[in-house]
Image 1 (cartoon, rainbow, N blue to C red):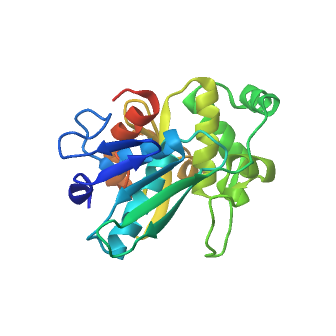
Image 2 (image 1 turned 90 degrees about the vertical axis):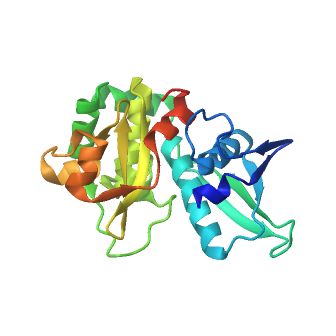
Length: 248
């Protein structure tokens, strides 16, 4: 999919970006064009690309990758949702249109300051605070949406229950407030979706599993973490770091 997408033209609000192979816009030497779409989307809240000749499976995978990169760099309590639609389906001017939906579930500055005073300002203290404050939410196989309480940082902390998205969002919000550079990396363990936090330097903090394993998955190199758990990322963390901080 990445190889095909690299030859598409991406239309932002008032701009056109040609993302040709080797010329991935604004992301030097990193060939993940789905991240380019996410970058434009986060800057303009709306973007479309020409998808003539692609099938439904391609479009679904594309939407999932764009959502994963938006999630990777977001520092909000609730991950913004990427909404996708197709216009002029089947025609040469077919376009996939994407837009962002934001949710009003943020912490106030006073709330963040109070939480930070409890969580501390290091990776270790934040991980420990969340492990002590949260338990894994038993959802009984139900599908969780991005705005569901256990998937948001605020809902998780207020109710004391979280799924992996809630653990990761909570860590991301507190880490960002403490000045710690990190991104969220989505992926799969087998056929089960999962998300972890990755600190600058490529070290994983998996608060979800640390909550059950006495910090076995704290500050583990990403490659080693993948070998340990069978986790397969769908986000390139270096690309995500570049999008968020301008560094690789």
